[in-house]
Amino acid sequence: MSPRGVHPSIDVDVGGKKIVLAVSGGIAAYKTVHVARSLTQLGADVRVVMTRSAQRFVGDQTFAGVTGNAVSTNLFGDGPDAPHVELARGADLALVAPATANTLARMASGLADDLVAATLLTVQCPILIAPAMHAEMWAHPATRASIATLAERGVKQVGPNSGPLMSGDSGMGRMAEPDEIVAAALRAIGHAQDLSGRRVIVTAGGTQEPIDPVRFIGNRSSGLMGFAIAHEASRRGAKVTLVAGPNTLIQPPGIEVVGVHTADEMRNAVLSGAADADVIVKAAAVADFKPVSHADRKLKKAEGPPEITLEPTPDILAELGAHPEIRKPGSVLVGFAAETEEDVDELKSLARHKLASKGADMIVANEVGTHDSGFGVRTNRAVIATADGVVDVGLVSKEALAAALIDRVVEFLAARA
Image 1 (cartoon, rainbow, N blue to C red):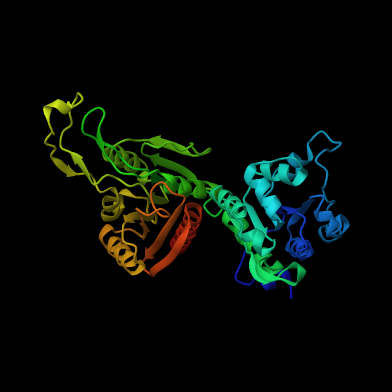
Image 2: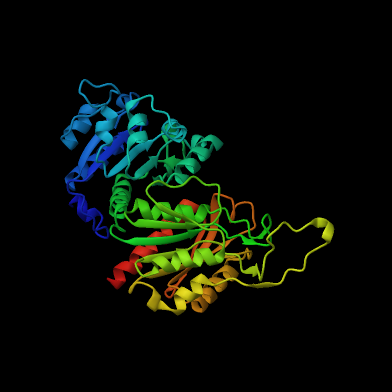
């Protein structure tokens, strides 16, 4: 059976793609030889880089033999370019297999004290890890923290699986099988530019509707979810405009950021680009109401509680859904709904209702107000509703939810092409 035949559902041409295969020191390194061979047979240019520990399990000549390329092991080279820079330059994917607990910790810490670590710190392409270690190491809080940190940075993961381990033990920590890793690598490369040439608008954070110069009506939205979506879309080739309410997040490189404060400002920013956008994702938590008027000077406490008359803010998502003529033909409209319902069936029902009432192509309903989901935390418990049904994503990192959402967006765009 040909390597492509092993993955008939994944139609990705990797011919000429440069894949940096980082091998660290674990007994699962013998499986990585099969990964290197399959990717090479598919036409990829596989460049293997090994830690010193990895060479105790598999010799570098084995990888050189199956890839046709010399294996890199030394941080210091003789040429004008540093080896880690040369390896990273032009890479389409960096694959770490096996990714040991030590390697994950060093990646999360940003160390660059050997060739593998320095190369992974230099690459500008997607990174895929295939963890492999003993079950106790996989369950350790330090490893869980490393995995969480890497996920926040957009690093993708395949495995581990449960099964036989060293020393006759069994449990979670067994590296994914070669076919699984190759399939994940193909998906990562296929996703890398599947929004190339597309324009995406993402809104993020909350709005602040002024009461006076120092007080406002707002909410607890941090902007983390919208920023994760913007980063994922940009990573996959889109030209992204991020319309962001007040936040304290680091501005993402390569993304146009339009700062706004009020719902009206956010509406104007979104509508000004709607006609050219292939995708609009309304992830912002816009305040539902605003004061009819606001004071020019700070209201004094001694004067007693002020009477504040409220009016609705513009419903940007509903306006975009009700007036498709203001959007680019064939564009995809996605809305978010922050809900406090903890029951998944209720969350699904609310998502279906919002999907119909807003005229959107997709609604992501996410639970807020708990310690592990919603505003200001790194994870979301969410469902994604489309006309085809509602999918329970579960409790995942905001980065994982962003990836799942963009996957569905790409499917919509392909169906409308």
